[in-house]
Length: 228
Image 1 (cartoon, rainbow, N blue to C red):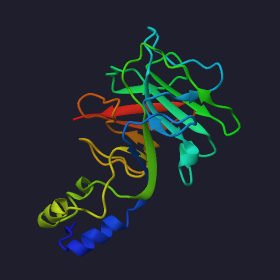
Image 2 (image 1 turned 30 degrees about the vertical axis):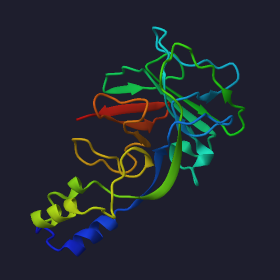
Image 3 (image 1 turned 180 degrees about the vertical axis):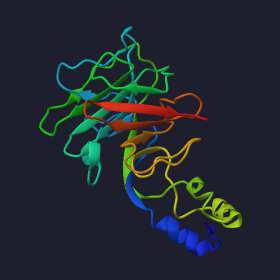
Image 4 (image 1 turned 180 degrees about the horizontal axis):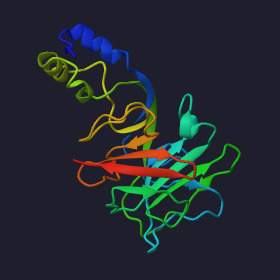
């Protein structure tokens, strides 16, 4: 197959693969408001009487990400018709994958319906650090990583695109709902292979620079990590 040697044609190929996503941006540490907002760290919300989740050994889990679905302009997929989804993880989690539970596990995910009353959970005093950072969402188009085209574009075209700053057809990294998953070392996965990705946050990092790819299954959530 002939390689694409015209940069305008290459740009058109990338532009044609746009899909919508929600990019989450952590804000500077501030006082947590008295109503639920999307955030990392701080105090997460749950049902009245619900306990902060812990490992089987009793270690409180890290408040990884709380998604308040009304913060999204048009929630879809795993976040459609839900009030909130909260994600907790063990602080020193070092396996490469996990299936969620709703309590007492290394990886806990809790989902809340629109008609449920949510209150702040009592955060265990022994859970140190992990301060509140509000997460704001921006809906925008997302594109594959340029590495997807390394064998489709001529070498000079590929290099020229890699050198462009800013690049208008960016694969967004960080916290992201939908879109094209950001590859770490492997091949580019396609939209729908995960519902949410969580890159390094102010409060939790997998390994040195890992990304968690989270997918809702019929019975809960599944996470798989990749790192450099």
